[in-house]
Image 1 (tube, rainbow, N blue to C red):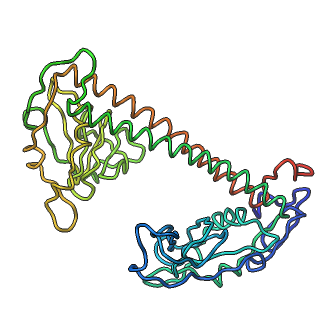
Image 2 (image 1 turned 90 degrees about the vertical axis):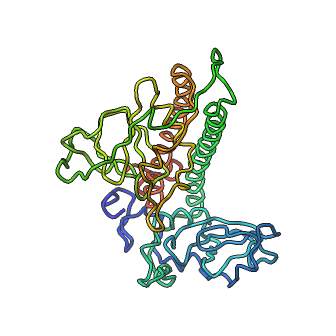
Image 3 (image 1 turned 45 degrees about the vertical axis):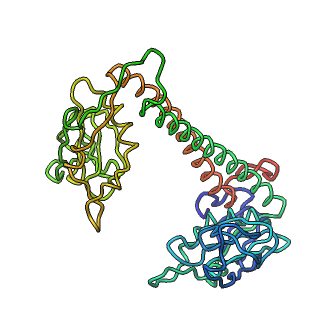
Length: 376
């Protein structure tokens, strides 16, 4: 805000930076009030009751009484997520772990919520074992305040992006549920694809695949190396050497043991993982799909960090169709994955667009046409 708007026509220098001439520079306390919610015990929170109950991280359940009636911004007051923002309305109960924010007549509630998101309020936490938001510091921070009509227009634009994001999130969940249903039917043989009717066979995993340990990668680590290095949480770097060929399935050995990953390129895997390769006549993508349905956490063999043994994997039995049916099923599920990936890509783009608009509209760097007298 201070640099992008510097010396632009129609802008002025203030304590909060360079802002449009029509905007004001003041402290947050001039446009809103903040007060913690009321104490409540878990005994007074139910799965079903008349009024929604909110804590510092959002909804907690329901209560038989309410503390507020209207439209408010709730800000998380304590914990790792303190500073998070929720817009709420109606008759609600707000616990002491949330800060209830009300606005003056010159301030639009939705615009203020977006401004507070931009400000990243978790920066105002006070150091302690349990992070807590300093309300006094938040209220003293300076903000750029557009006239009320421009506040409403900015909020409307940002709200339209929120709605688009929500629609895509719902589409992704719907596609995931469709894929889950397909997996349950196709991988169990309850539903057969056209042209297939042969019996499925019970096989032991040692007869259809090899299970190998990953290795430490310090000796082969290379920035921008030709081979990706994978840990239990995904790619963590690149290496100068390839430890495993593809296709393969990566499965966590320690830590995250319940998220198998299909790899279609040569790679290096670290020592907290297993690399699984299918033998000839077995389709790796089909086995990967089957691995996604296995409750790996149930096979945990450690009381501390989750741990999976190679013997556990090798002692499993799977029911498999012929290779051609495996490929056909894998192709159907792969198509469903591709649709989900495309939607996730669009969702990421929408989120980036929202972030760009948020960062620029609330600072006045970008003005909406109806409020822009001239381009600086």
